[in-house]
Image (cartoon, rainbow, N blue to C red; front, side, top):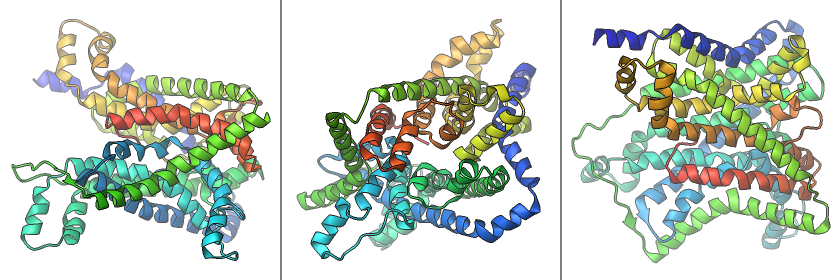
Amino acid sequence: MIMSVFVRQMAPMPLSAIVFLIAGLIALPLLYVTYSAITVDAAVWERLWNTRVPELALNTISLALGVALVTLCLGISTAWLLTRYTFRGRGFWEWALVLPLAIPSYVLAYVYTFLLDLGGPIERIWQALAGPEARVFSPYTFWGALLVMTLNTFPFVYLLSRSAFLTFNVSYEEAARVTGASKWRTFFFVSLPLIRPALVAGLFLVTLYVVSDFGAVSLLRFQTFTYAVYQQISGRFDYHAASALSLLLVAFAIAFLSAERWFRRKSRFYQTTGHQRPLRPFPCSSIKTTMITGYLAIVFIGAFALPTAYLAYWTVTGLSAGTVSGTFLEYLWNSLTLSATAATLALCLGTPVAYLASRYPSKWTILCLQGAYSGYVLPGPVAALALMMVFMQGVPFLYGTVVVLILAYLIHFLPAGLQAMESSLHQVAPNLEEAARSLGHRALHVFRRITFPLVRGGFFVAWMLMFIQAMKELPATLLLRPVGFDTLAVRIWLEASEELYQLAAPPALLIILVTAPIVFLLSRNHWQIS
C-alpha cells in the first residue's frame, strides 16, 4: 500500500518534462503580453488612461454584468419550466434551447444589424403598431450588444441550471412549504441557493465569453477591450498600446476567474438527509401549456430560428441571382481541415497534461495545470498579438503560415478540452493501471490498452468541444492567417462588415450546419458544453 501511494504521487520524469514543455508553450503568450505591457513607456499608459481606458472599462464591465443578469433570468426560467412541468413538446424544447450555441456571436450580430437598423423589418413592424415616427433602439448601441450577447450565451446558464434542477432533492422545498413559506419564497430562499454552484459556473462562462468576444462587438461597433486591441493592431499598428490594453483585458479575465473559484469554494452544498426525493414534473393544463410553449418559442425564435431562417433566405436568393460562387466550398474545406487539425493536436497535447493532473497530484502538477489553463484568460486578439510578436522576432520564417494559426487555436481552446479529459480520467480507478503495470507492461502500453478504451468517450467529447470552438474562431484567424487563406468565419466578418448580407449568409449557414449536429449530440447525451 505504501509503495502504491508513493508511485502515484511521484510522477515519472519524462512525463513531467513533457507536461512542463506543453504548459510553458501554452503560457508563453500570457507571459509575453505581461512583459510587453510592463515595459511599455509611461507616456503610453498615461495617454490610454486619459483617453481610452475609462470608456473601455465602463463598456466592458457594463456589458458583462448586463448580459450576466439577463442570461440568469432566461436560463433559470427556461430550465425551471422544462424540469418542473410536463407538457406536449417538452422533449423538443429540452434540446432546441441548446442550438443557439451553434451560432457564432458575429453571425447573430450581423443578422440583428439588418433586423434592427433604420428601415429594417423590426422597425417597420413597430411603426405599423405604434405610428410612423416610432423607433426601436439601434443595434449599434449598448442595447444592441446586450441583446445579441444574451441570445448567444443564455444556453450556458440553461444547461447547468437544468442539470442542477434534475438532481435536486425536492424534500427541502417540501420542508419549507410545510413551515408556511409561499412558492415564490421557497424558490428564492431554498431552490436557488441550493443550485448556486451551477449558477456561478454558468455566469462565469457567460461573463468570460462576453469579456473576450470580438466578432459581435466589432460588427456592432461597440467599444470594448477586445475590439480596441484589434483596432490598435490592425488599424494603427500600435503594438505598445495594444499590449497595454491586452494586459488590462487579461486582468479582467483573471479577476472573473478568481471570483468564480472563490464562489465555488464558498458554495459547496451536500445532501444531509438520507432520503432523496426524485423530481416529478407537474402536468400542465392546456392554458398553461400554451403559455409555457409561447415563452419558450419566443426565446428559441429570437436566438436560433429567426437568424437561421434569414440566413437560408439570403443564401437561396444569392444562389438564384448568381452572386454566390463555389469558392465557399474552399472556405468550408479550410475551416474543416484547420479545426480538425487543431482539435486533434490539442487532444494529443492535452492527454499527458490531463493524465498527470489526475494520477500524480502535487504542487508541481498544479503549477503545470495552471500554465496549461492560461489560455482561458487570453482572448483571441491578445493571443494573436503575442504570437505575432514572438514569431516576427524569433522565427520570422514561420510567421504568416498555418503553423502559427494552429498554435493560436491550441493555446486558446486546449483548456476546454482539458476539462473533459481530466474529468474522464478521474473516473477510471488507478488500480486497473497498477495491476497491468505489475504484470510487466509499460506505461504507454497500459494507457493504450487499458485506460484509453475506458475514457475514449470523454476524449471524443473534448475533441468535439475544441472542434466547435475552432470552427467559430475569428480574431486570431483574421490577424494570423496566411495571405489568401480564408475560413468561413473570416468571410462572414469581411462580407458582413460591408453589409453584403447575401454573400455573408452562405458561410454563416455552413457553420451552423456543421456545428448544430455536434451541439445536438452533446446535449442529447447530457454532456457539459463549456
